[in-house]
Image (cartoon, rainbow, N blue to C red; front, side, top):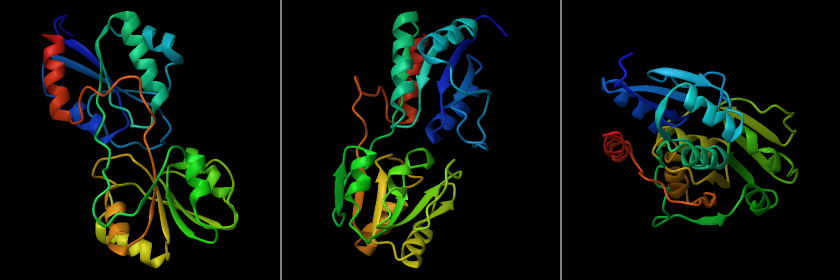
Length: 249
């Protein structure tokens, strides 16, 4: 590989990360390595070189960037992936490698929405009214507090099944976004859902559940994004591409 090619490490797992990798791989100036956490057995296809699994903390990430001669880190992980983002920023600061954060904008409450804002998963689980039928869309790793509520009915949607037993009052629905508005509305109606629980992930792939809840007049328990030390550098792929070009000029 020619020495003038800049190696870019994308911390991925999101649609934006996949799109970014596709754009950068078409540019002869760049070689892209996308890192995936390895939590999903069959992730979506990503263009370019892929690595899977954790780095082993900040030191492991620093060692990887040295070994692979990384010129730039793009943190395009999920808005709730706080630890890897903190590690990326720390590794960038300690190695002198620029680290840019790409984070999609959060959803905003609109006319007709009925949101109850919560700061964390456990608070969201407590907020579900007794006896309610809830569609819970927080992922398999954080669904346990909802399964612990034996006084409600839980429909938990996730990409892969949880690694623990599902209680009798809960059902797991395995599905991968994106979902159409028609499908989301039909699901809410068929399962007689009375409240939706969601992280404020942002983006288009799962926003239709919010639209469906609005159309049916259902309340939404919305879990806020965690606080971060610094704001994102860009909220879309176009913005981050411009920043990458300036950072590596």
